Image (cartoon, rainbow, N blue to C red):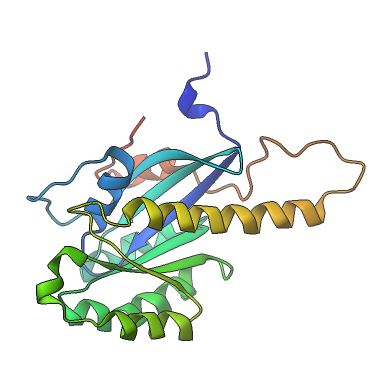
Length: 217
């Protein structure tokens, strides 16, 4: 029997990248399970979870990967960019160093991911407005220079978390469906249930790495 979780029209792999401690894991858990853990520890290796949303009447299944932010794990996580069609590049609005490192993460992403990957710059922990170290306008200008979308979020109080994921998944869907439309002959039948592009199997990669994995079914 096919489970409801297996019924989808498109499957998109999205990675979360950025320094350790910026809240990537809590963004993942807030979006996929509506959970937040104040005692969240640094991710070692890679975790992933899934959630499906509706866009233009289609079911989009997001396979979201949380890559470890610590420097010593970068060699491990670089392999997980393969097959990603979207990326949330996260920094902490209260820690300017995490914002300064965004450019390095962006270079790594450009080096390891598909050149057409959709990237969103995310200033997380907007609830810490009284400790803000990164002006919104500065980050917005950086995003515009590098042709990234931009949003500020708070995994703690849920501000803009849904919006961030919905926006990037919708953008990916529109790009992929337009490519599909342009490459489909006029005589071809409906393209429903076509999954493009086809990312690597989360389960297989996770098993190979023997790292901590989580999947929301």
